[in-house]
Length: 377
Image 1 (cartoon, one colour):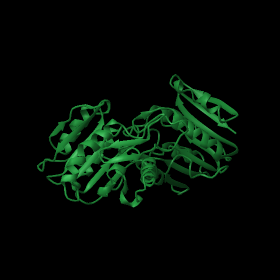
Image 2 (cartoon, helix red, strand yellow):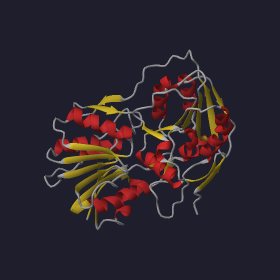
Image 3 (cartoon, one colour):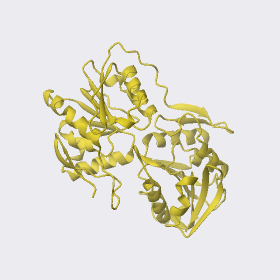
Image 4 (cartoon, one colour):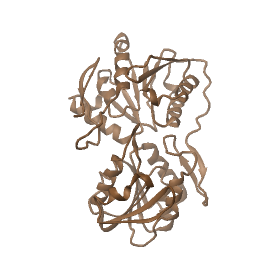
């Protein structure tokens, strides 16, 4: 059975993963969270009313354990923020004890401690470190925590470049901390994010914020999907599910100008990118944009078409559980006769998974690497 009680220096807390799954096999925190909390326990107590900033807390374990310090917490994940709120409530802690910020707007004040869980995307870490400059003082303690396998040399180099001299901890339970001493003479370059590129075969300048997959160019899976997007008047209400930078929905709208588009992603940076790209390229604002937990906020039997290139990881955890949940929700949200179009790597076997939820599953086109599948009620 998956452990849900986290015992750390700050106390015992119930911490759950979200969205909650039956027979959950994955824990909501890791050894890096435990190591970081143990390491900062005495340091925080030595400081009178320390101002604490937490960045990239997966499911709120850090925020819950450090709630007595009324920390700020920055995340690019809608699900992470929802999990933080629910785990605070689960532990009978007032939700507004922790001030939550999305990744697009950082808090304005100076911090004594900045605690960062190493993100999956190095570009996201770079963007955050550059934008943190106004939050640093000569005495700010900056600590990055992660599992050793996720702490590449690039993480160390970025910390040294944008903060100052780094010092590693010893590894404990395959986790490690990186301490950075603020160098007040550091020279920080202009932030290169968001990145812009010209979408091939169009005149569209595509905006990609730092935490977007393949943020410097069009990835080959999306390129393949764009070639075969459906076109028909019957598609009136359409979702770009897990929209990323919104290119799929954008090109679909170009082919189907009368459709109402709904862009949704759990990444705040993804939704911001999609909104900018759509509004720059399309003259009619026939679309809405929301950060959310897949299709949770959509009414049953409300959509004609869902376009989806499912993510295969949540934070640093790889697996097919997110895709399965998207497929199950799509079944409920689609009207009778509605369609779900999915692209994925051939080896992922999405056609088998889709048959658990849909009576009609058809491979529309494939190549050596990808397959595009249509599923219908």
